[in-house]
Image (tube, helix red, strand yellow):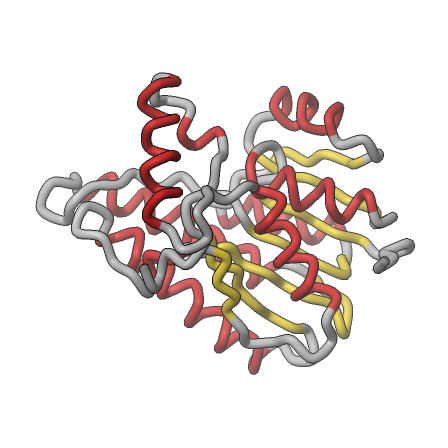
Length: 237
């Protein structure tokens, strides 16, 4: 099994869902992990569930000054993972422009700000989390597909600019995370069951599946400029 003892890892969005699962995966392998999010209480709750000690940091990636100041203080990391985003969704002609700007500012420009400011040790990695809508658009989530595609293109360019730091993207399909907690239990379960029936994998994704892909990219020295789909076959179904 891979050992990450002495490796330092920074996970943006580490208080829940994919980010929390990723942080736990790295921490369980001995890495020194810092999880970041906007809310300290949610970070504290997440840290209690990790099973391995992690540090916490309050960080708003929509604020360029805050991001720059944080990384100036924090020093260099071996691996940086960005899974956080606030992305209002809806059809282009129905989504308010202010909400569209917020989505782009959080998921794309937030990642851009972190990539611009983070100090990453030579041979380390930067990993974005996008989504399979980049290759399988939805008429009700057009902007999300465009943002995901932009993130993947950003990663490929940064793999050249930041080399020998490696830059990659993991592209999930439908993942059972707190993102769907606004739906009542019955509606959420029905959505999961319907999706599982349509997918070739016959299941809905779990956060740890995406964490495994992030770990693979971070620990494979020959992986850079890659986008790894972990979508149950959603892009081809």
